Image (cartoon, rainbow over all chains, first blue to last red; front, side, top):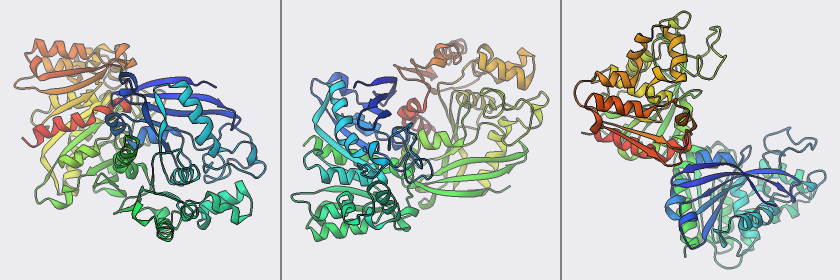
Length: 286
Length: 286
């Protein structure tokens, strides 16, 4: 399925493409943004790709407009993909009842519980269908060099999709990730709704649980604001991810920076997004 | 009248303050954003201030969220003020009938025509009341070092307020400014509505006309995107500003950069905002 380009916007010397396509995985039309750095046109070599997964209530626009990834991505020669956060335009009962479940809250997992299981397959969409279409439609993108990052729910998505798919991504980083969803209200609500009450099964979608069983090297950069109310409320639990890293011998590779006074917003993300592009670049150009 | 701080948000090492106050000039409550760089707390010296005037339909939030001025302002030690674009919360008949007149479209002039003349005094608000309150409430800001920039309608505002108030601002620059409003649909509609039909009087609020009579030195940086539909439609007319500069002997000081393919959006502004902060810094720290 090819993409329709609804807009081509100049940004930091490259082009931000606003794309739409019909997803067979999600059985709906989806929109996303794709940033192509200047080297996408000038270079004879394929360019690496960084996926940015957004958080609850967001679309692919928030990161593209407010995250400020494009400046460094342009300098480094990295394409950035900004997908949406859930299927759209469906009529599933309850999909719009709350900000943290259903529309805008796909949690980057494949739902197994009716009625969500027929469409809410964001894990397959992000790791399989979307990249397949992107690499087919944009030959300048290098399918062998993908990295992933994300914010909040998208930080959970980035960490878990990296840990569930060894070798698929060259690197992972996260902004204020939901790092131990089985133990926080957001994660418990989403997993119960999308997966049912088998809490043992939830662990396959929990970054801290997945890290405990991770073999081989693991290096990540995580930023968390100390003024982040969701951090204070125990929705993020980065300490549990660090504990899991210590339990599994990965503590040296898990760099968690507690940023003094920063909140959960895109003002926080934009301040540190350059560091996360640099983190990805270190591995994409290794 | 003092400000109420409704939020303090960390951004690039400094603080973005969301402020509200009651404006006696506009006879309404107004909101704005103020970015204080790290030096606002650490430096023993007062810090200079850059005013960013936004365009049609915007508020003080657009530039703060999408303009990306904060990174360079933090590095340079410059405070950035993001005011609103019109009085708010009024009940003037016709104020909300179109995007380019009334609410969100104050045009940074003092209206002389009823019913607008009682509240639509954005020129006095931006050049007098707002800075007076800011310098009273934030002693770390240096009232002797102010610069101004803006986008579209705000670019018109920046250029005209600089030219109307010799010595008030150390420098001026603009993104896609409405550079000759007496000769474009946006300007003609606004000036007729706010000032009446005396077209000769409109010239006192037209950057190109004001530049013709400007004595002394004049140096500015103007960016215009060649893919900007409003530029193509003749709403901006930067060529007329350049012609006025030549007519008045200021052509060397008027640097207009036509940016290939860029549009009128904040993707354009964020790409070049660092250059405009640097332009202001050159004069604020001279």
